[in-house]
Length: 308
Image (cartoon, rainbow, N blue to C red; front, side, top):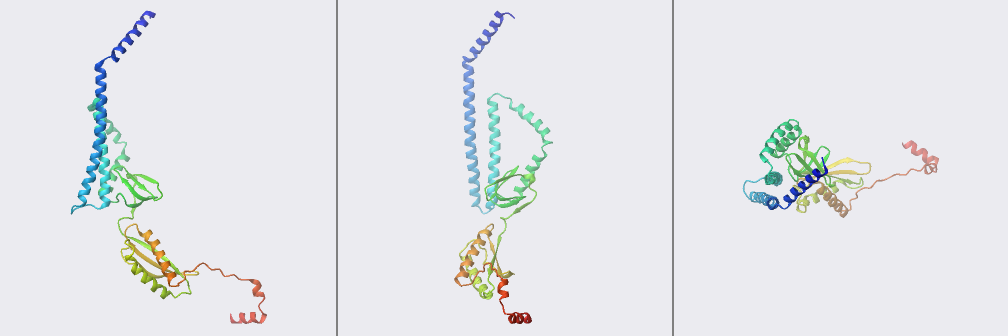
């Protein structure tokens, strides 16, 4: 190929590119497409805001009706519906943007269906996660806000989706479980909790008097703490320790408030015993000196041996 031919081809390419750049119709089409895409994104944002607000308002209205869900179930269903709404709106928005770019959406959907059918045979874990998530929500095994233990993780349920469950521990860690792996759950938030408090009394004290003082205190505690379902029960002497007598108290509380109430009961009992002069024992140690034993008179030592 001669240099003249090469120069001619380069000139033709430059001329065609210049014609494209000065083509008003092309720039109009690009501008119109950009405006449409921006409009679709704005509409998507507004639709999400309006949809989420509508879901929350529906549950607020339902909470005032005679037939209503528990707060736990309402929070779970609200979160789930918001997630589903987000997925649907994003999918519709994506398809609309592709149509604006003159991409064959029908062909993509048909191809995606065939590919999805092929992938579905290998995506058994995903299908299992979705089915398990559905039954967790349907059977109300646990809900958003519940305190649960799943495997080695323990904390508050932050979110339940169709595929994953998120649990936040009290120290801040966020545990994410595929629903298919949730095989055993301990839910602490459904029924009332029990607080167990052990109080030590010195052997020198009058146990019956100590129990009487504590019983009077326990009967008055429900008026001070709303988390108590019933007055705490004084069970009596639990164990006889090396230097103390352990008395056990149990109290029924609203769900998940047993740790707090156990601390409050210990505080109240300590203040009450101090006010009545009843001693809570401390560890004691008896020191034995061999030298002191040697200084004892032989007759006294013989008398002690005979008495033993």
